[in-house]
Image 1 (cartoon, helix red, strand yellow):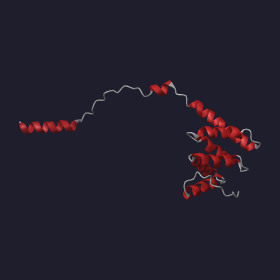
Image 2 (cartoon, rainbow, N blue to C red; image 1 turned 90 degrees about the horizontal axis):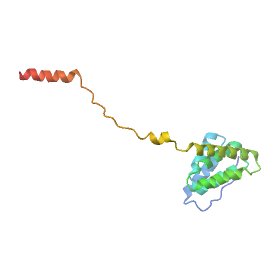
Image 3 (cartoon, one colour; image 1 turned 180 degrees about the vertical axis):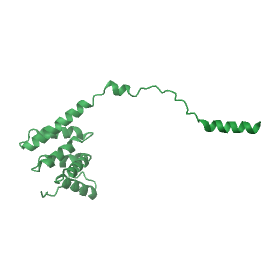
Image 4 (tube, rainbow, N blue to C red; image 1 turned 90 degrees about the vertical axis):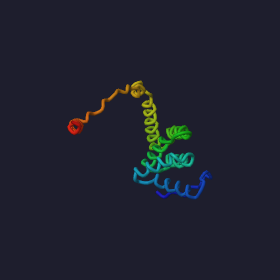
Length: 156
């Protein structure tokens, strides 16, 4: 799939960041799902620019693998971008493309299951509380006794 050149948003600081975003965007549309997911994960760390590229991939006419990788990147968003990523995934449920709806539903299910697993249990809290017991030192065995007995023989 031939990608159109992306217009810089003005948030990029230098030419290197523009090139990096272009490379990650191209890898996101890759046929190899592993590199697409890795690119999506890297884009999840890029705040607004990453969100913009992932959103573009999710709502484009790209293959389902690309949409799945973009949803993975949106799931991995952290900090202040997490809420915006959830909003994009919920917008995907209203999108007319069936692949986009399926990918967004799956991503939201994964996020909900992750949220229920984070409930702290009493076992985990109490696991840190344990009593430190005294462990006796190892005996040195017969070697020490021999040295002591040799020393006595010399003195006598």
